Structures are given as C-alpha cells and as structure tokens.
Image (cartoon, rainbow over all chains, first blue to last red; front, side, top):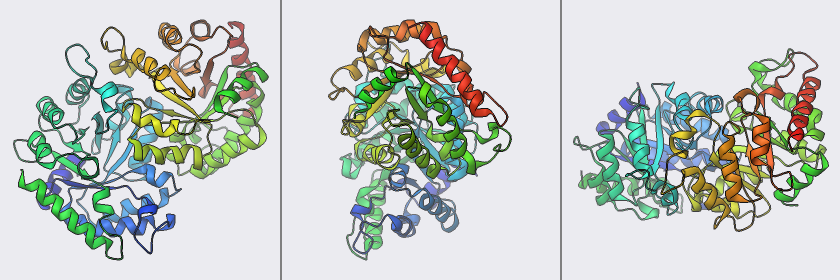
Length: 270
Length: 270
C-alpha cells in the first residue's frame, strides 16, 4: 500500500487527523527512565502503543536519536510500529536535502534502513534534489513549505515575482514535481492564513502541520484553514504535549488522555 | 583553536585550497574492499593519510555512512583525522535544517557525537534554525547558498526584490547572522559568476565550493571568481575524482596523485 493510501485509511479507521511526533529527550523522561539514552525505544514504544488507535501517523524526529547514537533504537521503533500497528504510516522527520547522488543515499537511509513510509525533505536545492525520493513511488515525500518557527519568514515569506517563496514551493510541489502524487507539504499551524493559501494552491495534497500545543498554534484556525472538501488532508502534529503529559509511571496513560483530547478537539472543527 | 583559525592555518601550512570530500560508496571501492560496508573506515582512512598534507580540510558526507549503518565508522574516521592529522579541520556535510529545539540535537550530533569542526546547514528555515549551531562559537557553520546542481536554480535564482535568493542568503549570512564570524557558504563551482557575486557580498568569508571534477566546474574560473585579496578564502572540494582515482591496491597512491594535481592546478590560478 502506498503512503497516500495508508494515510487515507488511517484517517478513516481512527477518525483522526492527529500525527503523534516522537521527539524523545531522555532529560524529560518520566521517573525510572529519566536520563537513560538506552531506554528511548522503551519510552517511545509505550507512547506508540498507548496512542496508535488515536493517530493517523507517527513522526519520529531523527535528530533526537542521532544525538545519542540511538539509530538502532529508531530502527527497532519503526519496526515495532509496522509490526504492532500495521496501517499507521511512519513519517521520518529528517528534513534531508542534497544533490542527486547523495540524495539517493538519504533515500536508502529513510526507506531502506529505517523502513519509513515517508520522509520530510528540504526543497532549497530544487527538483533534482527531490527526485531520488520520488523514485520510490509508494513512499511519501513531504517538503518543507511554510515552517512554524519565527525565522521561517526570513526566506519563505520573501516576494518572488508576485507570490511568496512558500507559495512557489507549493506550486512546484503540486505541479511538475508531483509525478506520482506522493508529495505532501509542511505548513506550520502558527500561520493559518498561509495554510489556507497553500490549500488553495495544492488541492487535496496532504499537509503536515506542526506547531499546535507547545508552539502555540490554534487548532480551530488550523482545521478551518487546512481541511479538504472531504474533511481530511491534514496530519496535525503534536509531540511534546503528548510525550511529556505525565511525569510518573503512568506516562503512557497520560499521553493517551492528551492524544484523545487533541484528536477530539481537532474533530470538533472538521 | 576555532574552525576559522585552523582552516587559515591549513591553507598556509599545506599551501592548499583543496578540500577532500569523503563520499564512500563501497560499490566503487577498489578490489579487495569492493562492496564491503564494514571497510568504509579503512578505505577513507587510507585516502586521508595519503592526502592530508595536500588538503585544507576533509569533508565526510554523512549520507554515505547513514545509508549503511556506519555511523560508528564515521566517528572513528573523524577521530583518526584529529589524532593523526591535527590542524586539518573536518567539515561534516550533513545539510541539516530544523527549528531550534531540534537543531540543538543536530548540533549535538555534529559537534558532540562526531566531533566535527564545522557542519553544513540549510538556510531555508531562517535565522532561529541556524542559531543553535552558532551557539558553538569555535565551530564553523557553512550555509547552503548557491548549490552546484541544476535544480539549484529552482529557488535560489528567484528574484527577491532586486536580488536573487542566494544573494539574500549571502547578505544575511554576512550580516546579522554572523555574530561570531564563524559562518561560511556553499557556492557551486558550476556557477563562477555567482561565486564572484557572493565574494563581493561577503568579503573574506570562507566559501566551500563543490562541483569541480565529476560535476564539471572549471578550476581557473572558480579560483579567479572566488579567491580573496589574500589569495585564500576557498575550500574547493573534490570527492569522487580523488576517492576513485585507482581501482587496485594502489588506490591511495592514485588518490594522492590526483589530489596533488588538483591542489597544484588550483594554485596555478591563485
């Protein structure tokens, strides 16, 4: 099944547009696991098992693993998701970007080594830096478009001949680049007006929306601006608010409560 | 010693503007090592030892290691360079780019785990995505500006209010962003006119220039366009032409011959 199909199935099956971000920082782990780089898999797997029926996708952020020599735990985590929760796609948040021959290696990293269903990619180097990922037509390729951070405006909001740079990226992504219909875009929840503008440009393309919760994005505004005519099209990401909802042994239960609240809050505005 | 200082010392000591790129692809390894993912360190260390007195920097490309679960060999390789060839800085070519909290993890990956002296970073997400690297003032932060691939023009060559996007990146990098004088830029050898334009904007800032050799960039044009008033300022990268110069047991000797020819060809135009 392609990434696009499994995402659509997960939207329906779990009645959810919630993407659970896995950004494991052992300094924030609950008592018993706190500070333990060797327990990252255990922590994340507990979160995954507690939230899998509430999510449309999981999004591990590779930097948190790479900083701690924990690539093996990331491999095990993605295998665990595929094994225990088939049908929930995994987006490797890596924001890779390089020329063709090197991008091919990054595609092997994401899709071969880690067995991710989709990967985030930076568009700054242009079409031939994206093509090696597109060569895997069953996989999702989610390009940075309008990011949720304050500095996102430094380049992405520049006017390029009557449109903003992020709008140009959206047009390229929805046009010539999207030969197999596998591209999605990252658009931050902190900018609902831009989510709406991107939705106008890209039709039904899936949008990965970080920035609710800790980053302050508004759920109602995000859903209203970003949903498709079929009331889907969004992967609204929450990481820290879910992962660190509890500080004790019941952290997975606490994560489940917040994940359900977030899913339901999103659904109220669909 | 800071990255900037050790780079300047290596320029002088080895009379060289040559950066040796380490993009190890076991399929291209010489007889005896060919296809062996477990011999990446051995291959790269032989290249390093054969070329260290001819280079101003080494640039391992992390994707080639990550695609093969060889991060441990990359750690060992950088430790080997620091141990055997102190004074030659190591640039980790990772082209990372993410928001602050995640970028901090990538900085730990590059500077803590891998002990790199500098890292390449993608500027698309703006200033706050670059700051976590700048928080290490002794390290180099080399931003993508005008990349050597054909698709580089898709975004980088767009007009943004009377200048191109890559010129804006150069102005930001040379201005407010460069609080500790540690920023460098990637400018492809395939575009000498743009190298000259970037040099005008950024003064003496170090430029990392890929694209000679396999990618077709011209050495004379690159040096003329990019050298500073003090006949330095460049890290002209060659990877494949050096790494795969020989196909037999003498591959390191063959690499040394090509590295010396390349260094000398560069020096003829300084």
